[in-house]
Amino acid sequence: MEVLSSTYSDTHREIVEGCKKNNRQAQQQLYKLYAKAMYNIAMRILNNTGEAEDVLQEAFFEAYKKIGSFKAESSIGAWLKKIVINRSINQLKKRKVVWLSVDNSPDMREDLSQKENEEATQWQVEKVHKGIQLLPDGFRTVLSLYLLEGYDHKEIAEICGISESTSKTQYNRAKKKLLEIIKNI
Image (tube, rainbow, N blue to C red; front, side, top):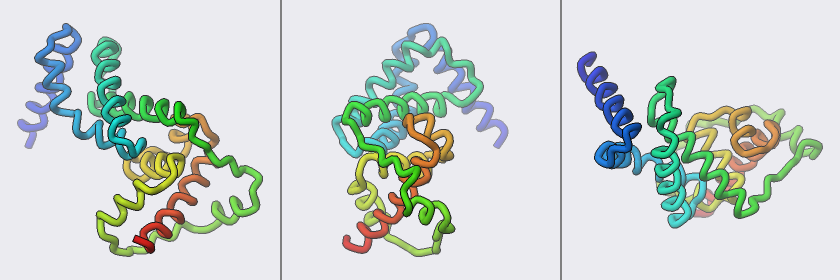
């Protein structure tokens, strides 16, 4: 197993170094390695094929342009993921997504005080996927960043330009809305 991980990181290191030298073949290799995963991230946030494709292309263009600033403190995949998420969030902002600010709302206290109900309910993957697609942009974005991308609410707040409590509220409401949607699918 050691040999595989060493070879894996050496290969990625070589690709990154090639990209830093503006080597088109290295850029193609990087794209082939990460395009599908990065597209899926953009699609989960944007829920629009055309926008996700545009974000993907713009993100790789930005990555090639800024590859010199990549310091290998994280993996190249994590670095690309951050670019894709930021571009996706910017695209959402262009749509003028309405973030529900509920800092003083009575039901926010209820939402935040309730323990997360994480029952081990088995849902069909297709229903959950379809339900996520039907969520409003703000809900879908926070839910995707929290559950699928592993960001915490503080990070989501920074990425989206919202308060941490708004992120938590969006997440709680997104879960409730998703449950309603799934029941009706």
